[in-house]
Image (cartoon, rainbow, N blue to C red; front, side, top):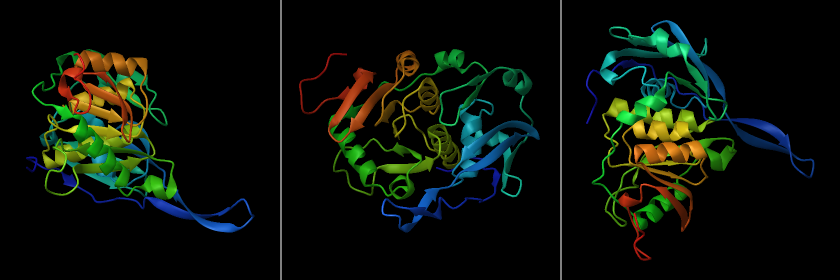
Length: 286
């Protein structure tokens, strides 16, 4: 389903990798792909908000997702245009009627533990109290194993050049379900918070409902990652990495089902046990 009032967008993706010369352990010159990294300054109605360091693969979606996850813009229909200009390393977002209270929100900035340092505007911790995630959806253990295998097999920039984080939005389908890969979106960037924002932007543009989906990240589960996932209304959050105390606290407050250290057949279920269905061992208590 396409989102209504789709904004005017540029299509300004940058190459994901660049080739440079390096010397290996034998002193041989080896052509080596490295990940791109570009500054992208975000302007909202001509007001400078933040400079993001990004791979540049999906700059328009990144800008939209950033505004969505910061709750600076409430709906895709409020946005008239997203224009990326790499000559000035900037993206200009224009709204249809302006953003009320933008100055007040920008006065409070929290530098987060996001890769390259993320920034949160306003008090998102207070706003998460209003988030309600679906409790009528379940994630089967076998489906978890299937999605981990799908992510493992997915062709990635990381396999070629390293130095990036990956995030994916995944359909919650029974193992062996007909059709293609359950991966709906897969985005890599130099910071995990950029990758999740780009997926949020694509969901907005495509009108995708996250209320029964699974979000996967290669990065650690900090409070910022949990808040963004909850704001996208995604009830399941999975990472191959660990989590922070604040991430765990926010996950409990939002009721999200959060799994960490998920690699192969191993995982740790931290919160939201009521949505998880084990298939190989006796059912865990809620």
